[in-house]
Amino acid sequence: GSNGVDGLNGSNGVDGTNGIDGTCSVVTLAPTSTGLGYYGSFFSTVIQSNAAQVNKMTFDTTDVANGVSIVSGSRITFAHSGTYNVAFSAQLDKTDSGQDDVDIWLSNASGPMSWTNTKIDVNNNNGKVVAAWNFFVTVTAGQYVELCWYSADSALRLYAQAPDTNPVRPEIPSVILTVNQVN
View 1 (cartoon, one colour):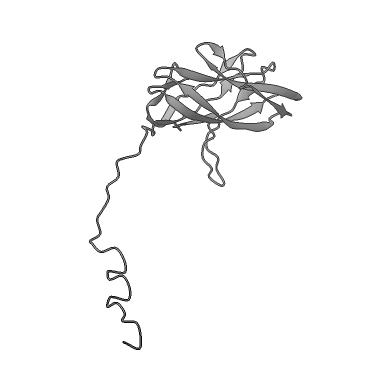
View 2: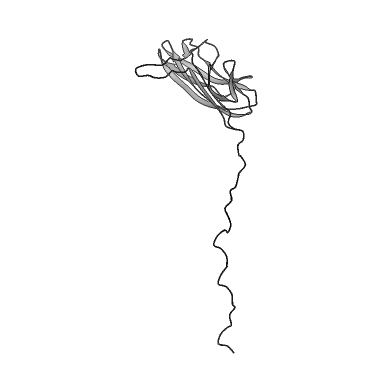
């Protein structure tokens, strides 16, 4: 007999590489774009007077645009269906004393859009306030929205101004509008 167990002859572990053996390959992913990219940037270079009735914010200048346009001066018109962020800033100004309310809301072809109104106060003669916020709107191709405003005081307006000097400062648009597709 033997003094011990005759052991198996084999390896002490797994014979192989320590990692993935092979060459690196480049994986090309399909584009993930969902068609986003429609946009527009517009503004107004003129003072917009208050007719003391429902007013529409108008835009006379297109900065850049792709798939969004201004039709009939005030209609923010979408060439493609989707959800868009509609952001604006309006330079409110009054030319008389006292305090006045201004309502600003969205409207479309069916009329005022529910739950979009905001009321802001403008105080004092030559008091200036900037109204600036945004809305998400879901539209189909060809639809439009408009920014509407109302104040009972005919002395309230959307104010534009020529450039200043000493020091030089740029013009003030009465309304600035940017529109970006988000979905």
